[in-house]
Amino acid sequence: MSELAELHEEEVLGKAYDARLMRRLLGYVRPYRGMTVAAVALIVLSSLLQLVGPLATAVALDLFIRPPADPAERSPLIADIQGFLDSRGLEPSAGEGLAVVALVYLVALVLTFVVLYVQSYVMQVMGQYIMFDLRAEVFERLQKLHVGYFDKNPVGRLVTRVTTDVEALNELFTAGLVSIFGDVVLLAGIVGVLFWLDWRLALVSFAIIPLLLALTAWFKLKARDSYREVRVKIARINAFLQEHITGMSVLQLFRQERRIFDDFDTINEDHRDANVRAIFYYAVYYPGVELITAIGLGLILWYGGGRVLVGALSIGSLIAFLQYSQRFYQPLADLSEKYNILQAAMASSERIFKILDTESLVKSPEDGYRPERMAGAVRFDQVRFAYKPGEPVLRDLSFEIRPGETMAVVGHTGAGKSTLANLLLRFYDVGSGSVSVDGVDVRQWDLRALRRSVAMVLQDVFLFSGTVGGNIKLEEPDIDPERVRWAAREVHALPFIEELPGGFDSKVRERGAGLSVGQKQLVSFARALAFDPRILILDEATSSIDTETEQLIQKALERLLADRTSLVIAHRLSTVQKADRILVLHKGELRELGSHQELLAQRGIYWRLYQLQYQDQEALAGAVAE
Image (cartoon, rainbow, N blue to C red; front, side, top):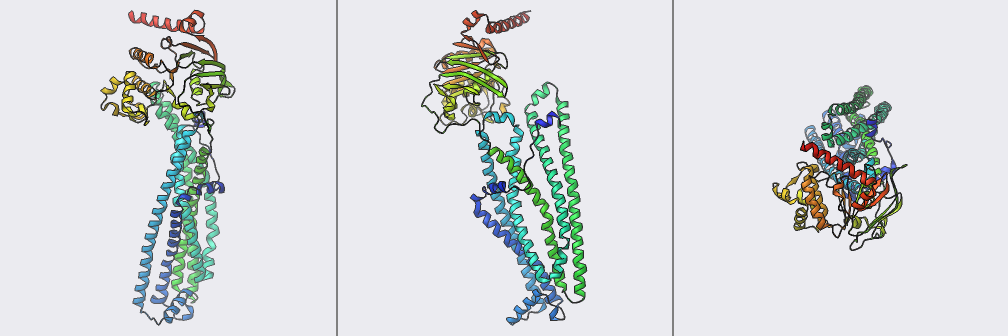
């Protein structure tokens, strides 16, 4: 398997039936036990009503259309009905009797329709409620999982959990469990009636059951493997599409359309071939079922017809046998479909429960530290951290940021700058050492209180679908429209927002499509200020803003960050020169610390970075002048 296929591979989990999983699934039915009881009662009633038709046919033929010449040849059914009529002195004519039988048949059909309609409606509604509960629970769990979990699980796979897998469970509740129960009741009723009518012919009717079960067992084995294969392929397609549609601009920029199309064509071809293999098994199974069923009906006609000729069986009983046999074979043939539903539910439930049982590696303590107001002192003490075992990103890093101080962090790519923000916000926990805020380890802080007091502006701005104002306040009830407007004005986003049709109520499409990169960053900056954080983290926040706008933001920061602790992560040294102190990271280690002038005087790493950028700027200015 190629690396691409392995990247988007979907784990194959589960057995055809797992009692542990089923018990857990039934727990979601308990809140709707009233609906379940009603559905079961209705399915039992519908199964009993389906027994009426063949019996009515037998009564019409043997009692009114062609009654046996010898009363001794009557079937037990006809004998019982005739005895009932005689006990009450009733002697209906053939026409009257047929009218009554036809009416009973019609009433049974109408009642069957009504009962099945109500039963289906109840089960579908219950299934929707269960899906609602499951999706809500899965999404809630995803919100609580640590950030590292999403680094290892493709978004397309997680979307499949919340959509396709939950839908498979809905089919189990609405068309699987209750239908199987109804089939069992119907089969039991048919077996009882057949043995009541003629036990010899009943045994003949059941002679083909071993063949039918053998074919079904073969199909179940093959269908299970093909079903799992199809599920793997479709999950791989979902993950591939999600990743590459999101990165479409990069694909087009580097002209990778043909290569990516070829990759998708391979994945799509695998999915097609898996479905074709599944189709083959279905193409063999259903005609095979029809053939075996035809053999069974032929045996009934052969043996039952012979008994009719010798007067040992009535013609009505024979026709009733044929009708019942067809209804008996159909549920057995449908077992394969029920098996597929069960297989899908088991596999989907195991994947869903795997998410629900995943414990977040970052949890808020029960009695977490939650002060009324954060002072903003930050301390890293001998911190070691690695995203992957054996590949440390930070090595025994120690430094302190005083309340209200602005500290800038610079260094080469991969030096660990952004990791500082991840650890401070406790998206990850340190491997050793500690990160503390106001003298309290962040692992002892209440997560909500910690993150509510820290705001972060990223280089890659994420905006949600909605409005501009909604993206600034994020539906926080404590932030009123005036504060939203104030925050936008302070970061100089107000002019472009007021020019939009609708102003703050202007629609924002997915990921902020329609806004420039600089505009999205200004909205993100306004969002951070609107929440009035005690600690502000800027991670390359001004990298995509033009020089004029950056200067305006710098003026705003001088006024707004005077009483806030700020951590400014930047590559462009022009954005950090006014910081109180500058921390220079190199391969995860603290190499230099001081003000801009102090670091230049040391003529170390910072001085070399400054010289490189300064020379590049001078060269660019000279080229423009020429």
